[in-house]
Image (cartoon, rainbow, N blue to C red; front, side):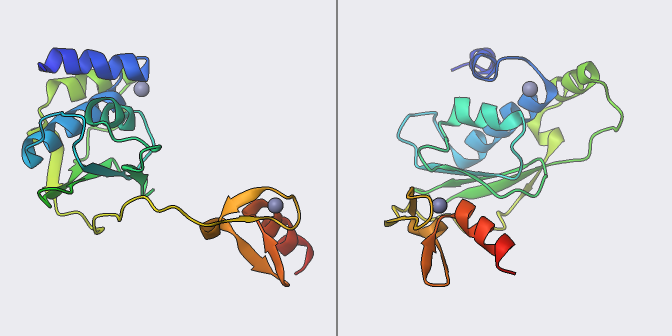
Length: 176
Ligand SMILES: [Zn+2]
Ligand SMILES: [Zn+2]
């Protein structure tokens, strides 16, 4: 697909054009180039985003990484950084946005990112985190307090009681 069509696809998904979306758009195309992706549907691609801003929508729209499929994960550092892992080839890359001029308006930011190539915008680094394991299915437990079911990973045991995170929070507040 040509670049213009890919951009339109990202904008349609995100809802508006902006500098942030441009960052994710440039990162997605750059990752595709560096990892040799072809935008096919069954790509075994995983993305770890370090922010949950506009740019992540481009990654979802263009690279098919999504929270529901478990191949879009967040490691929140507040950085404009994205790690991509291609499971089949074992190739990976972490793209980190270089500092941009400060104090840009919304429009200036949009123009700035549109005017620069991915090579100019990003430092190419090695991912800091290992490739994430496949999405796991956790056993579930019923909370003793609210009766709602939650996966084992989110269950806490307090005073012999099985508690969901919300109820464990209440418990900690009243039993200190
Ligand atoms: Zn936006
Ligand atoms: Zn509960």
